Length: 138
Image 1 (cartoon, rainbow, N blue to C red):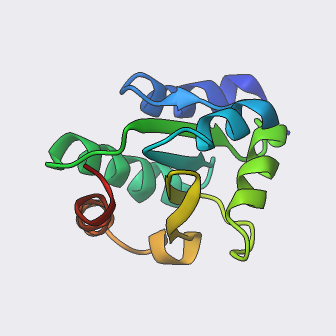
Image 2 (cartoon, helix red, strand yellow; image 1 turned 90 degrees about the vertical axis):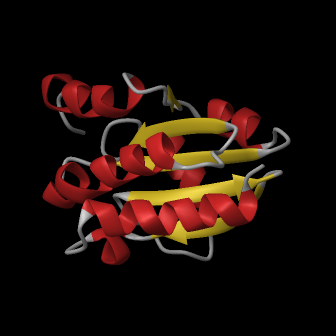
């Protein structure tokens, strides 16, 4: 488990921009069963999370015409219970961090895995997410 002094500033990059923290399995289940769309960002300490995932997600939600109803995040290696529960909901995709999942009415409709984040500019991730939002969000 990562120490809080390392993780908290990385969490704040999303939570300071309107993302709700999911820290327990119950919070994950309660959130995902709600009607509408929920974006879940599995945050991470890796360089691709800092360099492209978080900036790309923030660009997408700030610039999208259509946005998910709920913006949420859990931190891999820190919010262990919540991340494990999110990963149950994203099967058959293997565990990945960072990762970005969009759920609609409790069903997974889009998954962006680490290999789709690593090495791609934040702008490309943002554009992809905006197209996913356009397809699935109101």
